Length: 558
Figure 1 (cartoon, rainbow, N blue to C red):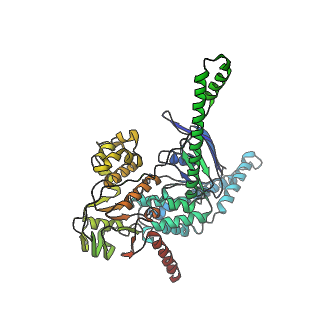
Figure 2 (cartoon, one colour):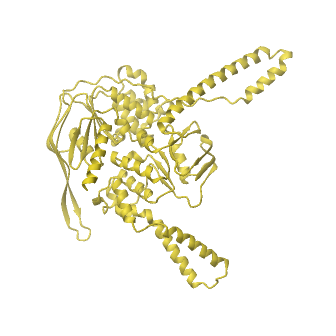
Figure 3 (tube, rainbow, N blue to C red):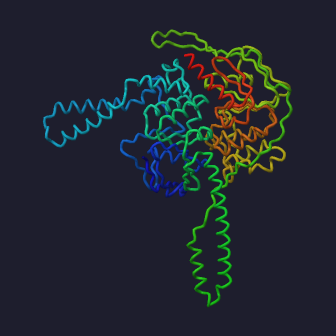
């Protein structure tokens, strides 16, 4: 369906990749994998046609519909959520207008025998066949179904898009792509702004649609669930595996071991050849043999071993200061927000209230690791702010003796000192034995080599996020509160962070939609929804199993 033929991308004297060829077939569900900077997003842009390769070409049949969701969107305001999502069908209205215009020309022209007249008839026939094959009678129902699946409430449909955060706008864009019924869906980190329920809905949608999908994602469970093929971009080339991500990891390990063995054998042969040349280069009877071996070495293609995966690096952080037995005790905690709504027609201001949750009571013990989960907007981050003392609330919230909170939210990255280098930022907080591992630590979080000398002010948002997490992990806190810490981390760095948190001897509260990250890390789940906070004494997968049962029962009740 899409054919990639010998493409290369070069910029500033650097080759990102070269001589890459592969096919995307109908119903292929492909994970595009590789470390940050390998060129995955660039590859997706080339497939989408928004960027051209330096050499080579990408081709597809003329009628192929390709839908592309980038990591970052430029969105317009001025429409409601429902109106903006319905823009997915704008091309159909344009097609209808084109059919009407051609029919008008056919009615007024009299050159019935001309080539131009026949060409118009052929064009209107082709357009009409395509247009009337699409069932437009249920388009409002389709819009509603997609929006509800992605976590919107019906009450959101008529709200202006300008009232929504970037994450929710990303969902609107994703809804538009899915409604276009594309032949190929290209998704760059689609789960970053989705909650667990929406991710599960998207998984089911992709698997049931039967369309071709190419996805970049750091959500291991999402990738494993939806993909049947893995293309790894590494060191300027690709490896194509007809395998799920987990199976690909096993195959890649075998490949590296074979490469290492072949590399060592070749190096041994090179050394033996060099020794022969050195020993006999002045011997007349061996001149031809020496020349032959010199030419052989010149033409030899050196075996390369792919970049080593350092995810096995284990970091031991300093012990945290001891807190009281119960770092967090909530008793009847509730939060209601007041806001005003102005009627644009009359100018009348109506005072409204939104209850986020009420009567929440729970106790978190020292050393426990718990997750806050639920749909976006149900109060997870609000509860975190209540614990932090940043919001007034109903009920009583107590922190235990000697609780020292380390808090990470997306905006933490903006609080770093822009004038310091990456190395200085970490060097300032590292204490004890960990100081000897600063270089390893920076490398593990993708700040190795010359990267560590960059000033913080030139870093991207994702790079600042990684640095802020690393800085926080090195400081002496005994209660860590992490709000969506994995959004900008690749799989390797995420594994290192997860292992560090599992080794952490303090108390952990993590707000996350990443099931793989939470699996094995937390032993208790607090579910936020319907203005309540419910405690589940289990890990994330046991919780998800109970949620599926509840969903089925709710369907039966309906």
